[in-house]
Length: 407
Image (cartoon, rainbow, N blue to C red):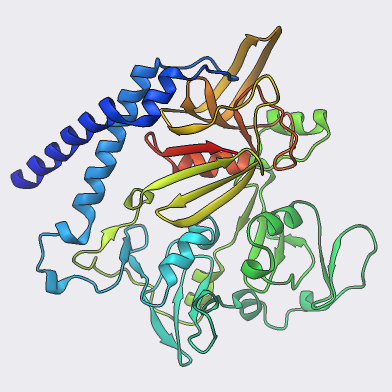
């Protein structure tokens, strides 16, 4: 234990020296004139010190957590990348590509945690999650298609009356002749934003009331509408501005994977953590955010895997969002935006999920417009996001996460 603590201290100390003295983003931040919605919460030197400390701790954590630093015999270590989820007591590995599929297609938000280990069901390798079942299809040409999602919505619904189709209503709803069902409103927006046909499949019911909630079943999921997730303030702003806003959990996926496993008597008992399998956290991978000012899109990476994409709206002419390599140096769940610049003054309360990246430039949720990804640049320099996207990123990223802004 003492040797590991010494090694951790050495890693942090060495990293701090490199990060504070020589990193290019710090030098750029000192020279870059700041144009932003917010007044900076820290001086450039204070911001650099916060980033350096956070990055040193994260680097030390990853080094200690990797298999090469395990105290167990190397012969006992897993042969493929594998992580453990203490919340449910199960592993997730890349033996069949399940881990990378989970990371790149929604993670906890879409699939939840694993509730079983990998096992053979009906002659196929599968793994159940709280909200899904992953299946390995080696017969499919191309590794990208070999991991597929089971039709758990169909399997749970069976022959219930709601499966019967409806006529095309011709009212602007999206109609699917394949199943003779429609999608509209909040459910349609969620379906389109979070994976569409590839993740959820076709709707197999209309939206209807069940257990006091509006729900809708899909081939691979069940949507549940939670209007209370959006507070009255944002609901009023939505109506006042005549736009549609979304919060991260306004629509949620039910735990169909867990329900189906229980209905089939599948063992979901937690198992012991394997030697060398690190407890899951986004910190296991180097996280990086890229903002493309030309396309007005943001992409988040864990190492080289894309784990999230979101449309943005950045600084308009005269308040252009600065380009460069930066890092998140402060995070605030809520902040009131005030400022004066270029002959303009503003006061905007309750701006959610704020992450500063350079000076007064921040990634943050936005409720006064929804022009994300359209090419309309609305801000005074900040990177505007939908409230749902801003919350996901806020919960995923940490102080020290790299943010690259470019054309």
